[in-house]
Length: 394
Image (cartoon, rainbow, N blue to C red; front, side):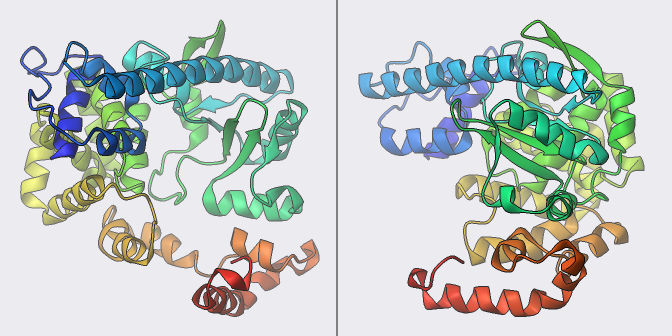
């Protein structure tokens, strides 16, 4: 099975050897569909780790070159992201905004000890909600523009969108670098109920391209990675690699602090799901706390099975109605039992969305009308979708 071969290569390529690191070897059976294998590598965003894990194996030359090229391009992008992060942080500091780096180059250096080992995607920065517009304006001076149609939105629409999806995305077209400006750490504020301001107070600096960058402390980083991957259904293996490396770098006391904090905040299912997946897929030890909760709470096992299904099916967040319905009904509601979390999830049906703002631009003084218009806007989008692509923008 290609996924399990990929999993083995990934486990062997992780920077920190696991408990069986000396005996982990990639499968000797290399009679595989390498084109499909490379598609899985791309989907799971693990090219650098898989290439490292398969070093010394007699790969077919085209497959070896394809992996090398992917890892090389990822390395170039990782270095570009590091330079850009340093310049953006300096720029924000210059206008009195202290950002908090959530993942990206800071996580790569801390967890893997190398900028190029981790997948280089985008830059995620938390900024205070009141500073969102100023931070975006600073990025615009560096050549960034809003993604999609957000640039035509009013400040009130952009602020509402940021509150709904917890970030705004901006793109630097020349370099192809995307920055997400976050106003909180998760879309649902009750899923990760740690105030970002408190996280910033105990942030730990990491030097990136010669510039100290504030990042989540080790305890908050571990908890945030568990929550972030859980929200996305764990459908990409590079999130598993991140969590595995961060967990391996924690001392027993630090792991105990992560578990205690997660339990105190109602996140025990999420914090248990992560080590169970690491144990199942790459053979890492399973902490007793996670094992006991999985035995007592059947929802933990159900969440793990949903994540394994998404990983095996190479499913993205919402590729179609089936996955969206399965995620919304069988997965997301059970991440946390807290009623505030459940209420916030349901309340999003009443607030204006980006699709609403695009379909019917309203002046700011009519902004409160969006919840009333949502049923009509939704019905119109559904009718166009059912009519097919020829009906125009959906």
